[in-house]
Image (cartoon, rainbow, N blue to C red; front, side):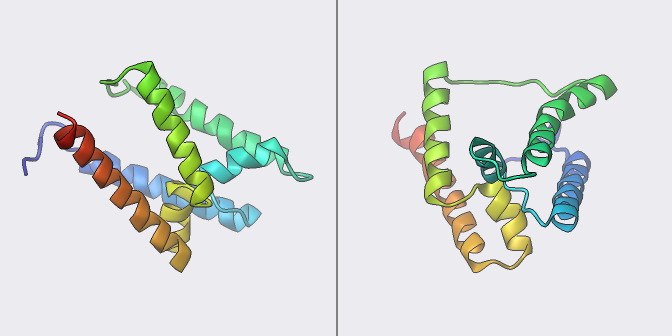
Length: 143
């Protein structure tokens, strides 16, 4: 294994992890809600009374945060190596997976494991195994 030391950013990654932890902790303490993106987005489709404002604010924050970062500095370059069709199919498969897994990596991996949820631990292990298999297949088996 080789580490690309020029692009290794432990301090910004640590700061990002701390901010994610603070944000999810505050949402849980203030609203009693788990910061699972698929659940928050899915809840907008059939919102319960009083749920629309906080769900909308959370999702708007996901889009505004990079703009705030851009105002403070430059965003890292994005490199997309696949076609729009592959990206759309990947997004569809992720969406199907979140329905089968009753949540996503943010809900299970960040919030669920922090709450010692056995279901979230199993789901997160499955997410990572599926990711590892996908990388292996796309980089080694299909080439």
